[in-house]
Length: 227
Length: 408
Image 1 (cartoon, rainbow over the protein chains, first blue to last red):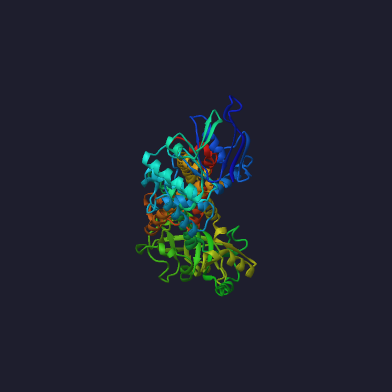
Image 2 (image 1 turned 135 degrees about the horizontal axis):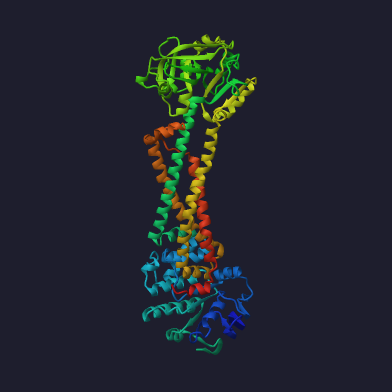
């Protein structure tokens, strides 16, 4: 079953001065349960593509359909709600809320979705356990290592029961051991719970784990390999 | 959770938030205390005016206030006094004669408002007798004829001492000039030197006898109520009960006090608004710094689905919490300072002469009503709301995809 379908996607920056084709006619689709990486050199357009997939940026031309819903024509306010209920994000710099505990950070998304208090507390604890942070629920981000913070970020991304998770360079700030742990957790969630993960990365360790690798250069897909 | 995050967010940078809180606290302390001080001065003046000078309500012949003449009297004063006694709101009443006279001693002479009173009744509506200290005689305690109670100012002017004699000349009811020598039995000194200089008191019966005035009449009936707040309501009731007379409230008798009280009421708020306006710019600056420091985090919040309304509310709540914390502390400290100084009083004796010249006491007891604190609380919240608009708008303008990648 197709989760994402991209048709003739274009993104041109600074159209009025010197146009830069960050994404230049991409056609792609993702099936449910994929564990895919988008790779490419800096400036190749992978982050721009990921931003458009996540509804953070709008395409200049082309269509993005997620679960049969065309998001490329949505208004910004509609996109905010769409992101909340359909997409999980993991960022390079973790971006946790420093004044909240790990569990509160995970609960936060569910609160935005207006989950009942007991249910969100229960799910937050389950997710903390799933990412191997049982017992660290009440720690603030500042008291956790980079790897642990990124695992909280994964739990947060999963909290809203999204259709897929977009992870932008999730291992860029992590050491080898933390990277390995994080990738194992994500792979396990992918295999056991059929959660779709799409990474943008430079990291060879992520590429090694990915079952599909899409290489982007100059805003175009130059290869799409399934392992 | 937004409330909880907002509250926690303001304590991320404790020092910066504390500086703002202390600035608001000091600003409001200054505002509340200054307001209470000014209010205390005016309230004491109004109280003194009611207790010593005009009471709550006065009744006169309709022509009397325009032209103080002995013939413009209230004919049925005793009947009115009896009827007023049945009004439950009325505490005490006293009738007076009021004429102008010339006062002469061998060395000096001056004009004076001569007020004829029944001392025991008068003591119930006027506290003037309390302003005669032990060494300055009494308020007609000895039942001697032709006694006079004068002010220290008046005594100084005419070189009078206790038991000195002063010759008073005035016009009788038949239009002829009459007069008598009066012995000073008491010397008072109130906080209003203008009042002191203009007025002297004699027994009603002495003045009535010398002027052939009908003792069942009066020029003025002074009424003291149980509750000052009922003044207008009771005045209307009295006016309809005695339509042939003129009924005036203390505010109508001393309109300057009413105007000052009204102006002060407005000024107290203007003063606090100016303080809050100045503090508002500091709060905007602080919140702007807080927003700019959190660009990445705000970008993440918007990316994961926190809508603009919630982002705006969060920044607004942070600003309001910060402002209210300082506001509450400022008002609390202000209330304590006002309470303590309101009990002990603040002595401005060094400026007593100046205060007295304009009718004010030199010991000031700061006081302010609960409605003022509630009003200031509303103003603090409004300041918080206004101060939050610019930083919150700044946050809303962030593009999540760019904000997340911002290098801090």
